[in-house]
Length: 598
Image (tube, rainbow, N blue to C red; front, side):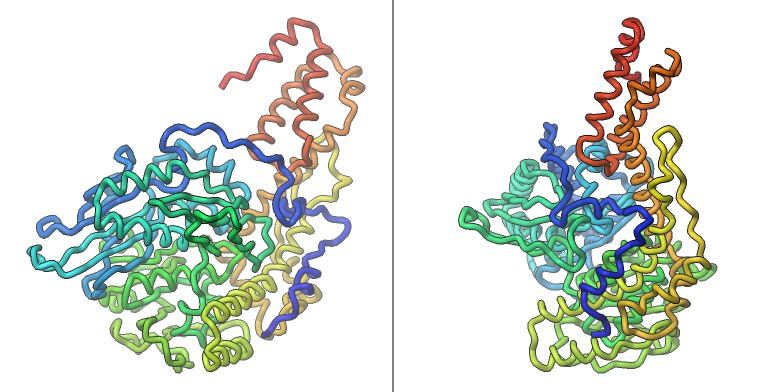
């Protein structure tokens, strides 16, 4: 491997002594935040269901109408006509895929504008501890599909074709595919009563709270799983163990979201490092595959290969010519957008010929032999979807190729190493590569925080220093990725390109928000340590009322933003406010005790 031990990686994360520790995660023990266990609020019927799923759809094929949504459950669930059309086309494989039997895959589509979830604030509260890559997808839905196609002579078309589709905001691909394996076969046998029973089961589940071990009964089976938190150490997964009291648990899921990276990248695994660069930089990528299952798995693998960074551009695990964004994404009048598309229709070989990077995946079921194609192919050689598997691009990677990981994986294939072990090796490789890249950025951004001694309770919190690209580049000489990675190459060029990408923009916005909240939290803590009673003795009545109003506003905002304050800070501030109010005349006390009008 091209990387030193994880202990050395962690050493690099230590920040200079005179700067603040800025990440909320750093304030927490490894196993999670120190917050008290909060009781789950009483929920209305279907609220629990809605915290996991938007709805369940059945999509069938009608000879006259084509694909059509036959059932939406629960019946009160709302989908616009445009959303229904998207679901219809994306729930069926292209006719050329020839998917006989049962097929599972997933897609992603835009949510109609102007529609907000009534559960928004409630779910934000539960999601605050989720890793950035597992937060609900704002503006998009995921569709998890179980498609069945079997010969049936009694039907005009000669085939029974139907899809059961789970629509959700959550990117828990492994979990939802496991759930579908339980629900779909039962549905195809027993029809709608089975859906009603499944939905009622789901509406009794606890909410998807990160860090908790969840036991979820469904259709007479019990699933046990844990949703990761942002406090988990990257690269580790807290295994959900079976216990003696689990006599009813049938399925224990080791992960809710991870796909098998090795299986997905196997057809092009000589190019994994280049693919990591392309995803990191938000380059336009298209995956051409023989089936929606292979296209969606490969796109999800690409998106997850830069974890723990969140991929911030659009990605479509399965994309069709009927998609509402088809014209927008295939136009030749402008450069291809920052998006990763997974396609199966041969028509795309022609319409996307101008795209700069194309990955052609063969049938993964025939991956018994070692992938032999080591050279990157020229785009002009890609004529049809039947072209040989490989990566078609003119891209020149910034970093030198890491031969060690290739040899390690090749050796694993020759020695028939289990797929799970190969997957773990590849996932660790990508994690260390991403960490080596991101640590210098984390270190520099931490230095933008003002010193703790500059925080005064009686002044507004100090501002962060702006991000200066050239200043950052100078830090790379002594504190660059060479401290944790043996890989050589043009790291500076890679950083310059990354700083122009949507992934940097999304990452920096998130870090900036965390740091601003940390400053607000430290300011609140400083206020709580002050002797406010002594302070107000020098104030006029008007100034004291003004102080109370400002403190109440700060308290409300802190609760709303869930600021990372020390335990006990907010109750202490509330107590200070009460004490100050009681020192005022009775008429003012009555006014200040009134709740603020909405």
